[in-house]
Length: 616
Image 1 (tube, rainbow, N blue to C red):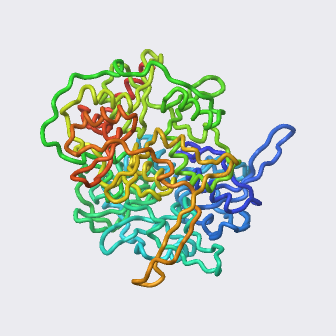
Image 2 (cartoon, rainbow, N blue to C red):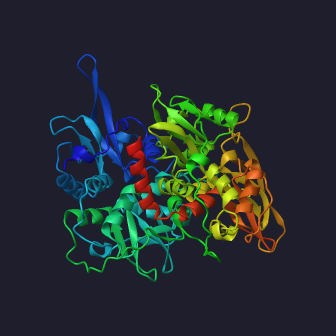
Image 3 (tube, helix red, strand yellow):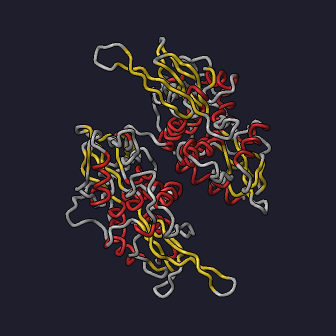
């Protein structure tokens, strides 16, 4: 297998005279592990090519610790190594290991330094999986790395940053006592700005923050008996640097890195490894953190009674027989206007030839907001075309598929819409809203709210929570709505369908702000005298809607969904004995329908896609 077969073909690059902060922004937006440095050169009379000069890694772009730095790319870029298109994969992997890199740029050949793409270890894993290669080792325990780096949540970020820069550490496990609490990597520092410890202040002093403020809370872990191919699939899909390996009691045994999984495919078991029998646990095993896909797959509360059989409802009975479209070159503002005018949550995106290239939804717009950072920190000139928020085309199902199959498909693809086609003709779409309506009509008595609702307390925010915090919370936990509350009193509700239309700019074109005042005691036990005034962007109470009626955890889930639909909201507060315990959303309903599938989600998905592709 050659490099050109698996590499990422992209023209994303940065020029040597650009600021390093600009390079950091590009890596944050694209998620690349390697950013080529190239210049455009004329070839002949009408042609151009990109000549590669070097590249930057994630470690290189976090070397600047001030938002006002004028450091140039040329002063930090690396010139070696460079990979060639016709290089064998094993040789390319050897080069990456020799230079301790996760990715490197690719040029056409040793004689032609025209930049053509990037090769990462993740790309190699994806190529091996796509080609059907089988690993030469069986379980994680056979390639486990016993050595790993860790820190405490209260350690100062400048110390961790120093180890990233000087020792090129790839990740730190964050431990609270003997308990694994989170993980911090260079990507966490790329995605955030607040960690930068060289900032202007009145006294020119700024205390670096603590690791707990910037780490990824919780971390996906793997047991030692997990099959290598399952870990490879997970790493290839999510591009994680490593996974901690824990035993049944949660004790850390080591880590499995991308390089370890690749070693299992190319060489087999490590000489010092002790093999264990292979089992098939649910993957990924998770600690504290619940990602979007994993949250949907969990059965959170056992039912008190068996589920009654319900006559199957097909997509033909509940589909929406039309879909609105926008052009890939339209603005996001135009897409919002179309959604508002027609009261829809999804728009199909077509190119200049009229071919569908993806879908834009309210959720995808919010996700873009969360990935690109707080909206008040952006420049007004930033491009806001549809292509920046477009997701791949939705999965296709036949009209005879059931609502459970549609829900399973949404869960597997982490989407809330599917296309319905028959004989290659688009009949319509089905969204989570249609599934919620079916659930309310057909599934009375199936389950209680407590059986379906998201883990308690996770969907609650303080009134002064920032816009960005709310977006990240909804993205991380697959929430349609969050409750704004002080203590146990619900003050309002923030929903996915309404949040997109929050007016974040004032009539003069600037970002709306508000003035917050804190009053504190100047000394312990004294009167509240010290006043701290802060001008901040919008907070949760600025864009929440009035709280709808709360439901009890013992209420029938179908009745709760009817109440949700009658108030046109995506979720409802859940209150027990005067205590706010969480939020019940439409995504909980989708998860429940997906659990009702006759076969596991993955198997049903593969079968559904195979059947749909034959018909289309």
